[in-house]
Amino acid sequence: MNPIDAMQAFVRVAELASFTKAADSLGLPKASISIAIRQLENQLGAQLLHRTTRRVQPTQDGQAFYARCKELLGDLDELQSMFQHDKQSLRGRLRVDMPISIANRTVIPRLPDFLRDHPQMEIELSSTDRKVDLIAEGFDCVLRVGTLGDSSLVARTLGSLRIVNCVSPAYLREHGTPRTLDDLPRHWLVHYANTLGSRPLGFEYRDGVAYRHIAMRGVITVNNTEAYEAACLAGLGIIQAPEAGVRPLLESGAMIEVMPDYRAEAMPMSFVYARRHNLPRRTQVFMAWVGALLAPSLEGHSAL
Image (cartoon, rainbow, N blue to C red; front, side):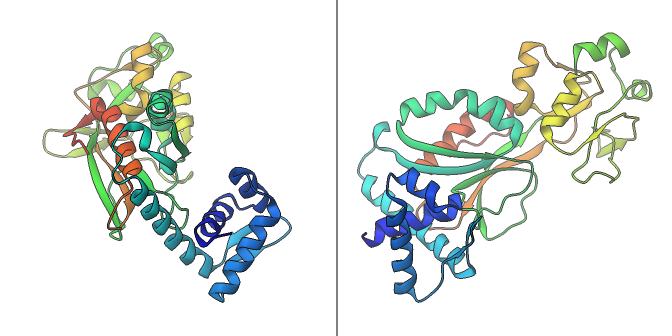
């Protein structure tokens, strides 16, 4: 197996944590993958993978080698397509992470359109509320909401994500419609906490000068966006959610916006990726496509 194919085999094993799955994804015998990895380790003079009967994972040297392989293979793909500018020329695998509600309600429903335009591309889409490690987990780009803290990554800001106050029709029938801050003591809030047991801040609003919070009663506290939306749909209280995630529910009438004059602070949204001299064109095109999908829910939208 040539060095490029061997690196591709190693990357697939590292990403799938399995020789068998890597072999299946590449259409190669498992023995060929094992031999290629062993040859790489002999050439490098380093162990790249920890192997057990249950799990395969990169060693510390393997993690460093994985990051360099991803960069080199990305450069190779870019080199092969640098003079091809039609949609059909975009190819390869793209690994991306984004918030659950945005993935499920905005991106995935439109993904068939993107893949019809770029039939040689394959998307690995992770959606989670946890903050993934872009480098260690091999993501090409990550869509993040909120203030960024890792200066080793490159960030492209899309704009600020509008937050809307939502309830279900069932909630309105039972509790009536909240219209002002004075109405809130008679209503319920679905509380959100990253760590259960911590004290939720309450209903966020702007008083004309700064953003403040009003403590509210609630019967449920959740720690992920799917449960947050589900609690609202079940009529358990008001939620303050990114418009991009709940827009389809608002359009269908499953959720109803209330108190539009008392919205929480908009949250910055950015694509982040590893610092490198040339970002693969497939990554650039995908980020621009997602940015266009989210534009109606963003304040100060900036096209990529």
